[in-house]
Image 1 (spheres, rainbow, N blue to C red):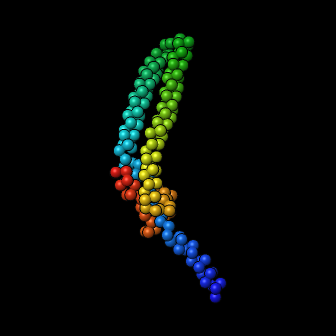
Image 2: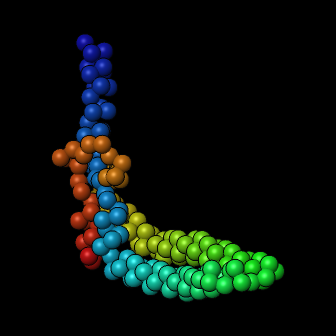
Image 3: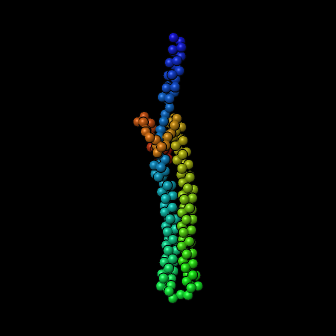
Length: 164
């Protein structure tokens, strides 16, 4: 009889411990995109992208001008001038490609650097909400297959904590 009681107690213990755990889910992109800092980040990146596009447009116009001149005069030019002008056109293409590649790389680095403090701010708020509400786990909603109705959505709590 004592063995049965101990056995039942051992099986019931993990169930009662698990029942006390509070689980929440969280959608970080929803909170991040709602922050005013994110709007500033996107505006800054859009302005930088416009500057890059303007510079690429200048290079494109230079290319078109040189290419048109070459096509108009190509038959009349001596071989050494043809080769030099073809090289100029090729150089413009290479400069434009290199500029575009480097600019996009810098744009991604800039975005990542500007996004880090925003992510850290959200992470800090989420940790505070989890501590205040005694959540054992906070799961990423984008990685979940199923969310139980008993799970708590931490997004409104974090938004409130951040003043959004």
